[in-house]
Amino acid sequence: MPVNADGLPETAVPRNPGDPAPPPGLVVVGRFDQLPGYGVNRPRGADSWLFTWTTGGRGRLRQGTAETRAGAGDLVVLAPGVRHDYGVEPGAGHWRFWWAHCRARASWPAWLRPYGVGDGLYVVTPTPLGAHDRVEAAFRRMLADARWTGTGAPPATTPADDRERVAVAHAAAARELALGALEEIVLLTAGAARTPSPRPGIDPRVRRAQALIAADPGAPHTVRSLAAGVALSPSRFAHLFTQQLGRSPMRELREARLRHAARLLEGTDLSVERVAAASGFASPFHFNRVFRERYGMPPGAYRTGGPMVGM
Image (cartoon, rainbow, N blue to C red; front, side, top):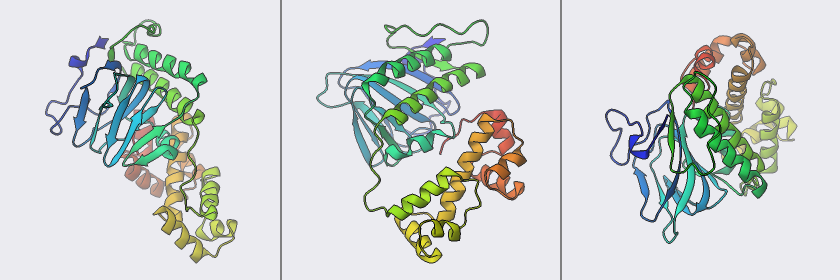
């Protein structure tokens, strides 16, 4: 059922000084139209991801040392665990925006990564005007779905004039429906926005190796095979890749394989052993260990518990 801003759930003991954030595991969605002077400050960030979609006015958002301004059509996402503050941009008359707190599904960070500006801040812009109505409709559906109790038919989509509303998805089915709507929003914006140009200075051969890994993470890639694919010696390739990206080729490959495995767990009924093999892990025991390290739970629990994990 809808609640107002004063009724937002909080942790029993505040995690840190500053404005409270919803406790982890909840899906909370709302729409605000705030006047100058509005602001939220969390010195240690939040335990969940925060998604904001601006529909009018201007907002200012800071995460760690990164900062951005948000106007109509901008999706700005703040990853958990980093100090942040946000509010109406100084000089703006108001800031009207949708927002959602939740744990991100495993595939979302990869979709957002091209739009990262540092410290877990992602700015997805510009979204073509033709997609704005559909994003708005998805947020209204998310707000309606979050109110569903799990009995009877889900509520109708929230009317366009339903302002200043907040809903917390308590039922498991309501949470999954709400996350489905948010996933559509992430896809619509990240897919339609103009992907930023590659970071200047990245060698084309390194980008080519990244593309080879992303295209087929389950393939039996090695440093030698990737180096051959970009016409470099293995030692030169490994040095160049690590120097430019800050991680080794094999670390990049492992992350790609884990993301691929998470998608298979989400979208198929393959056994954990077959998911491991399809993702390039020769040993199911090794797969279980590294998956738990990455996502905080073993593959079987991830599948039954739902793909609500962050990066």
